[in-house]
Image (cartoon, rainbow, N blue to C red; front, side, top):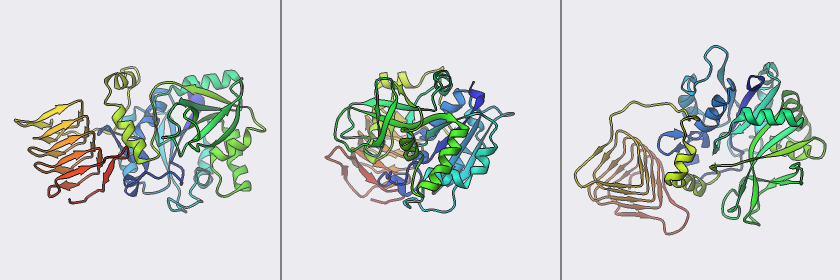
Length: 372
């Protein structure tokens, strides 16, 4: 059944903004756990589900994603029948109201119309979860609905998921409405921006959006379609993260430091693929101490690391302490520097400052290439 569907991976909506990190790359290119990029997860879900034809839409600063995906061979895509196609939109800046997924589809409509598959599965590049799309497609076809929408029940909708849409269902799991989360209640059903529908309906929604409004997104069109089409919800269970703010990014990484959560998410029967970089193992010097952390290769650890994620080629100096933080690749943390509750971007040199600490829930962000 999966061969009857092709995959579409969206960029984040133009109103989603992740402080600092977003200045340098799209969310799909964000490092996750120091090893993966966020976009690895939707592509791996599709690959594991037997979907071999995948469109990846890129609307701004695409260099890092293009370099990471490359020819897509590391995603275990069928080399004879499948491929990953990178599709660009040329017209709009990141924050433009015209920078929507619909406009990206319109610019590449010919490619969509040429796809021979009967169905399309649309997934976002800014969410992390595990989902068997083949099962989702089978359920969709068996139910005979027009659109199936994936959702996740959360109990922290006031604090998080603020840029996501909220789903309202009737007793038959029919979608009654799809609206922006206003943070008015703890428990909400969050739309995972993942949809299954026929190619015909997908193209019809794209063309209707062009007539309705240049600023409409696919989610807006599906919200309108709830009145005329049979749109059903399908509940997702398991780990779910929507990277729509720096808080979300930090929280998603930190949650994976919980051993049980990580073991439940990363399983042998559902591998997550990424581009590998060969490098020597990290060296731990006399006096180094590392607890409950993920440390990537090619690092030099001389100080203390607690409850943190350390990217590739990172140096933690003598007497330095890194606690509850994310240190991205090639950062150099000098001797005696104390860092707590921070996200330190790539190529940072922190040698002259003594302390980087956030006292609030929101982590401190240290910008890329900065010297402190």
